Image 1 (cartoon, helix red, strand yellow):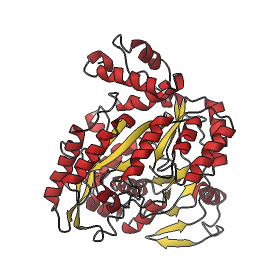
Image 2 (image 1 turned 30 degrees about the vertical axis):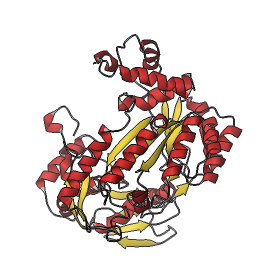
Image 3 (image 1 turned 45 degrees about the vertical axis):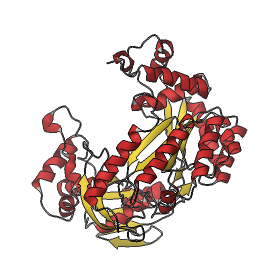
Length: 483
């Protein structure tokens, strides 16, 4: 879809048409989808392989990723007839039962170890799956190979183009106010490495796409700290971009993790997402000592009524305390807000705006989101309990109204019908955007790299905030963006 050559561009909208793709993967002919798949095949090498592995993506706001994967599977099976093995998160594997996909030969939820055993059987010419332990269940023509998930391993970047993880120096010109420090950043080659050691979340926020599937895997703190020490010594990154949904799954876990990092004398910088509970002032100061420079908190709303409604399990006072403590510890704070939650009232939005403005000195980056109903959230199986009904598919792409994809429309029981609800979501988003503290005006593709660069150079949040403020003052100057 990103090709500069028109005839090579891919129409991705077809993968949001669940009915059309469902028919294709169940065996119906569709010349238009075949043409799209031919374009996709030219971008990758599939010919000549006896076995093809496909990763089933984790579902978030829509099922387009899974539908694309299943459509590609159907196309490759028709054209080359390879053995197709699919694997991925439990959430996506469970959704396979919804589709009549007959072209996946094996589905594995046993991780790399089970996959290795299966491939070894192919190589040695053994009777497939006969020597494998564990249950084999045929579902929709597939054999499900079950097994214990492979423990999380240390990320291995060997053989990868490590320069791809470095900042590329997108700026070219600067004003005198920020010239020296930003030119240094421009040449720094700031390197950030991703690291995921927690999958899943133990909480059940109603809107979250992981609320229904409670599968989790957590690497123990001592092992995480050891891996970080080894990665720091091997690659010397400026920092680590942790990919947890919630790093503080418990206060004990995050404290033990920081204790291990400090004990190992590992000098690292890192950022992650966190809940506003399972933290106290001492823990946040310890996190900063262990290298934490940024935490992104999913606060969602400052309405006590809505916090209870979405089952957040956190009070407004705790939200406020955590933001203040984080700032005192020198940690950059990001805050996520959701506008247009079901049964939201004007007073709820006003409470959120008042909270954000009252605490703006502690909020460094504000992420304002429009609510959309997602697969995997509690809103779908418990719709009536949560006061919504008449859920229907709209597959509305980001446009001049919604900036994110919306799969579903719905009506509020005893409240707004969808057309009115849609307008309210947009109105709430605009109201929060227009009436709250602004963000540091830095292009989003530079924010993380610049933040890590500045913390690595200065370590002083107050000084870093001052540099961002100077950069923001230049936001209307063409030279600041190098245009």
